[in-house]
Length: 374
Image (cartoon, rainbow, N blue to C red; front, side):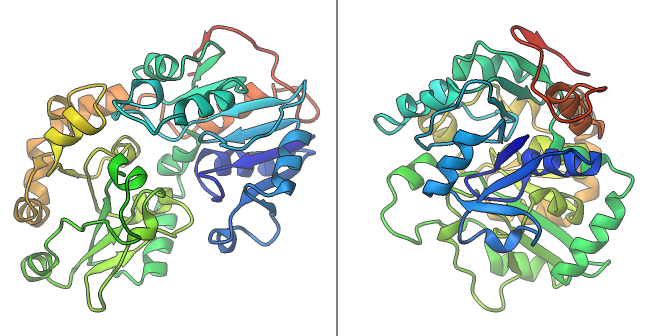
């Protein structure tokens, strides 16, 4: 059995990583190959076999695979051989409109990605609310399984406190420091119409952040992988660059509060129950002109929407008030988007791919319809 894994075009992360680790823990009799990239190779364990994403070797691996597991489109020209199973885990609960539902895309991009969608055999959905959106956006008619995301199992793990302590120690953060994780989403106009290598504008007033909050607050910046090359950090800044940290799931545990705008990180972080702030300084433009939403963020956000850096810093300074004011909305948000995130998603997905009782990894036996593994 040959299994090939792809996460964000070359990372050792996300649900493919969780499924790989689950199969290794089961002692699966399989050959595991990951697609990596030169700038991500250091994030792979030494005992994990890799080939470079986009290389002839990666095409050969995909075409020879019995199972392909990816969390995103694989924008490569390869032929899926008969009998191969392609599991698409996708990489986030959609707030932003995706694929066929977007307001704008570069000419030919969506048509090219249709070739990848046509290869999918199984698609995961993190919750009931996302299933019709994923199916409709991709025009996908194959099986959709509501399982939760394997990548999020660690957030409910009995070992989560150990992971938190380890990641904070690795970052050099003390127990008494408040860690703010900032995860702004990518903007289509910056990626597809970029004018230079460093055109990401940092909207947080770092001087005010430092003066108001002091040295006991640390700001971890995690840019979307589409724009992570745009970062410049000045020496002495309270910002720590965690763009190249191997997996954001560990950062969720290490952080004390999440600041985002429209990123799907909000749905994952909600599992932790820790406070969230929404720095939506370009809300009208992003919602009405650039990308569009599937639902009104203002109606469901489990934390305050702030439009200026000053408001953001003030909210960080009084997280207890933020938590109290948004407790009911937070609970509703979790009921809607985290109802399957119980720490057992990996096992549910592996049981779909390789049904219990089989002596070794095999091919899925289910075809057609929506299948809700709960």
